Length: 304
Image (cartoon, rainbow, N blue to C red):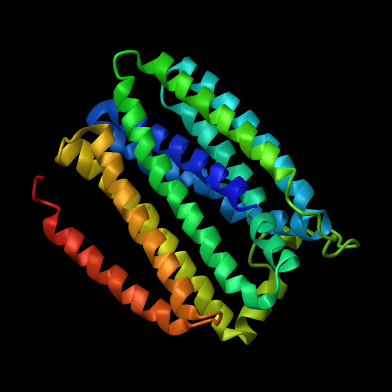
């Protein structure tokens, strides 16, 4: 399971960073305006599809959904090959949306299957490993995207298509590994779909969050973390390509350094938690993140 999700996260981040850099260089100085569009298209399935994805994960076999999503990843990567061949910015952006849709369906099954496979005392360590390997994929996927794009600058379209074929190969390997995931019982076999499931925060969920303040705080903190992460990702790309003019490869290495920090944080949290949920670590991590953002602001005008 760990290797399967690692390869999927690697593909996601390689292709996403490839599209973002393509937007910046294909359109020129105005390409930065396509970065928010790219993030919006990638994220919108998570906003409106998470409720349905959670229903699917409860109603059907999580292992079957994982395998199906990996086949979907192959199809999306093949679509990426043809999207770059069509030229322009919008075809790759549409594929990025499809990638977000595939990831939305994959997520609840990926995380939901862990409690069904593991003992409760092993969950903190398992979550730490999943998060660490995810961000290892972020590091290498994002960094490799910049390096590869810089290598194919002279023959950009054909080069980008070959990179996407490589992503297809990675997706095939991930799909083969998905068949090794252990089967688990269906969580709620008789669950019926209701229109309220189209909204991730339906009435029962809102009632639960009102009663469980800790769950509400965790949700808000997680949302803020990913909001900051998405914003910083775009800013670092623009700093590197437009302001510092250091090229695609070195810009992606800047992003990789963020991923290294997150991976180290995941390992540290796993070791420090000692098989317990420790909210003090979240508080300290939030202060550290705030301090680093201030430091990034202070050096933004400094050329490397």
